[in-house]
Length: 451
Image 1 (tube, rainbow, N blue to C red):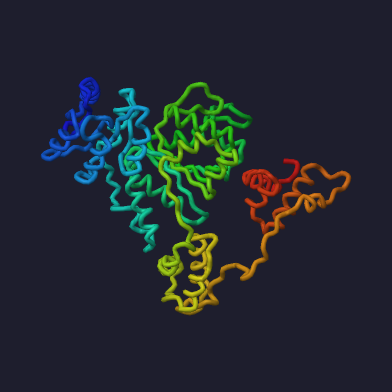
Image 2 (cartoon, helix red, strand yellow):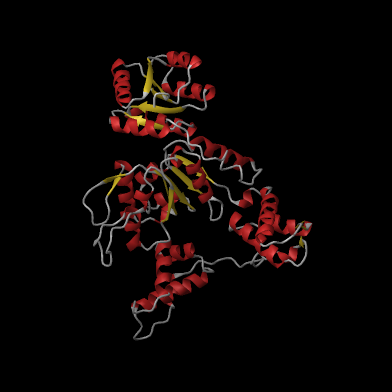
């Protein structure tokens, strides 16, 4: 480690000395500066892998120093040291590219943990995981720049966007462009796809015998993502009890397996995704405000495809080339009428739906040209407006002596789904339950009643 250089910037003699001593005990080569001006002078003739700077200093403060160093030495990782009143400033500079912050007082182990993570930049063998994102849209290009800026930090990221806009792609890029690729992996957990009874053990793990049928220890997603990234998809579907446990895990940096009694330390960067306006979910009391603020340090909002129409022909050509190769086809291009069909459609399923439409067209076309008739959008040109279901309508659900509560519940759910064209979100709102409840009930109805 002798070739690694760390610079400590703090106007307090005691703090500089303490941090230097901790680093030198771990055999790191470190220097110190008592002011931002001295730090800039030192970096004129020397290069440092990491700069750790205090916020409150006379003259130029740590936030101004950070911004100056980002311009002069963009390759240097910068960690902010801050007291509680300065936490907001620290989070702001993380959004601008600081890799992390240390909140005073901090344990020496936390300092070493951060330095070990950021002392060497990872070499993934690729130049930029976002170079293959097909876009010329100005808003999307700004978003990709933001992803590149914030990826190296440890800060939680909240990604919002409609289904099919590429949230998972962004989460993967945030991990691949971070320092965590050297030490850990990205682990995904869809909070809406796993039944409530299993989700806690899937997230935190479970000890042998913790519940009926558990004959071995189960390692949860948090432990599997240790030193890496945990991608929590559809986070707004998480139940309130699990939200509380997730909040504790984030605050304490530790978890407990179901049925366990010993805390397990974890070092995980959270990327949470949702297709809902999570602020509204918070306002409705369905999502904890304190957890929301913990996750919403950096927010990335992906625009729907209908807001970036100039990208539709580019994406269509990209998918045409992709599926030509996959199916050994030689389709040359789209007709002007086909392009008109693609660009005039509103794409409720976004990029994923466009990809499926092009894939289908490549498979079905009998020539080297995709024409308008080859594009099947599975839509009614003038769908009737969805009318809200009244209580009177629900009261008309037939009842027969001998029907079970399960039968009545199923009848109510299925009729409401039909009335809303099988839109589960609107069905849940009408029946005043969560979307998760509707999904779990539909899975339940697929099984024989004896189960």
